[in-house]
Structure formats: C-alpha cells, structure tokens
Amino acid sequence: MKKSTIGFFVTVGILLLAIVAVGAQLVIKKNKKDVKVQEAVVPVVVMEVKNGVIEDIIDLTGYIDPVETVNVISKIPGKFVRKAVEEGAYVGRDQVIAYVNRDEPGVQFESFPVKSPFDGVVAKFNFDVGSMVSPQFPLAVVVKINTVVIKTSVVEKDFAKVKMGQLAKVYTDAYSDRFFEGRVSRIAPTLDASSHTAEVEISIPNQERLLKPGMFVHIELVADTHTGVPVVPKTVVSKRMGKDMIFVFDPAGGRVAMREAKLGFYDLNNYEILGGVKVGELVVAEDQAILQDGVKAAIAKKLDDASAPKPEEKKEVPEKAEGK
Image 1 (cartoon, rainbow, N blue to C red):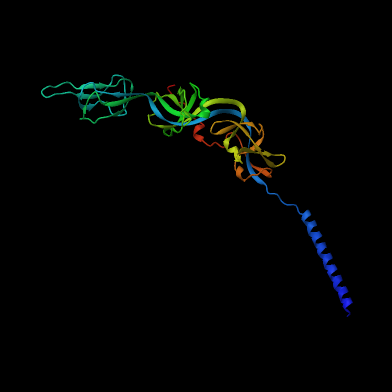
Image 2: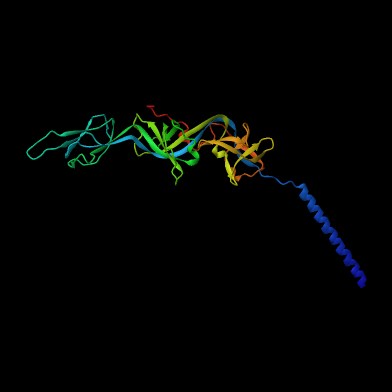
C-alpha cells in the first residue's frame, strides 16, 4: 500500500477519535447539568421571640459582715473563771456572758459579771477559762446580726447606675434555694485611683439570723427594669467576628439568616433585643456553632417559654427572706 494511502487512513482515524472525544465531553457536561445536587438540611431547635420583663443586673460578690462589732472587756483585772454562754450563742442586752474573779491573798470577792452591751451573738472569747484578764484586753467579741451588711465594689462603668436604697438580690451557697433582699445603704463618694472601683455597702434584714458573718455571697444589683420588650435567653446569642449574632429561621424559605443583634439590658440569663430581630420571629436556640448564614434548615423542636434554656435554674423560683 502506498505511503500516501496509509497517511490518509491515519489522518481519518485521528479525526474520528477527536470527534468521539468531543462528543463524549458534551454528553458528560449535559449529564452534569441534568443532575441536581442534593443540599443538606440542618435540624434546628427554635423558639419564638416574645415581649417580656427584664432587669438590668450588675453582678457582684462580697462577704457578710455584722452591722456592729464590739469588743467586750472586763472592767476589773482578775482570773477568767467561767463562761456563762458558749461562742455562737445569741444574747440580750446586759446579759452576762462571763465571770471574772479578783480574789487576792486573804481576801475573797464575788465573781464579777461581764455583760453584753447589746442584743447580738457572741462571736468568740479571746481567752481560755483560767487565764488572767484586764481592762486593756478584750475578753470577748459580740456582734449584732439582726441586720448584716455586705461590702462590695462596682467598676467605673457601673458607678452611675448605683443609687441609695437600690434593690439587691443576695444568694449564698448555704441556702441555694432562696435569695435574700437587701438595699444599698452606702456609696463611696470617690473611686479608687488604681482599681477604678467604688465601695458600696448593702444592708440586709436578718431577723432569722440565717446569714452569718464571713459567708461568701453573690449579689445581683437591680439597676433598672424594662417591661413589654423583646427578650431572648442568652443561649440564643452567639459571637461571630466579635459581633452579637442571632440566627433567624424563615419557615417559608426553609433557611436560617444570620443577623447582627443590638442588645439592651442583661439579667445574667436573658437579653433585651433592641434591634435586628422582631417579636414573632423564630430564632435558633441551640447549637448555633454548626450554622452558617443561608443554610437550609428544618425545625426539629420548637421550645415554649417553659422549656426555653435556663442557665441558672436555682434563681427561677426564689423565696424572699423574712423580717423585712
């Protein structure tokens, strides 16, 4: 066969292969267009935004102190011979708490009674029975605890919110199922130059004498209250790029939208919503970390007010202290 004939057939073969390859690519592209990508649907837990009541809370800590502390002395020198009461006993004004004997060689005296200056609790005796005492050194310490005080401090940004007589809710681990109500009784006129804080004192009625000096307490100072405003649990709000974000679910479109929220009062459990979300809209209440703006979603569960997340359950059903 001539070389020209062979070359002709080779050329034709190459052309046929090229045509087949181009045709195959066109078929593949067409099939890709016909195949629809199945988009994943994320199940979400949602709740409806509703109006409510919210307090602006300043979160503080402190320790219980007696409203008054007195060092009790023996007016005469002598031997501490007997306790009339034990430490921790509640005593009345002028009640005898101890006896001191001033006997001298060859002379005997009646034991001298040491009395409490007011109604209170004997915090401690500074000497053991049998010790020698004198008016220069306190024999015992009596504290008044029908009212107790908490000394705490507020940072500069909250200083203007604190007012005399302001309500404070006080919690202690010793009585975790209740809170005690107190009022601001003193506000320092100046701030500490190094810490930028101001000392605040809170007085609490304590007729039951449940609150003891030295107890550590958690304080919620109520700065203000708003009623009839959109309120959501703090679990609804998430941080993205340093901004407060809320995921809103659109039932019609079946997708979630990430919106920046403008927040108002915060009561340690909930936020007031000033903008970004409206009353009646559905917001994602859990697992926002797995979501992105615009993802397809379906409602897995809808929470009502009773089942909404409550980060601090013990504060939901508090009981007021008596003796107010």
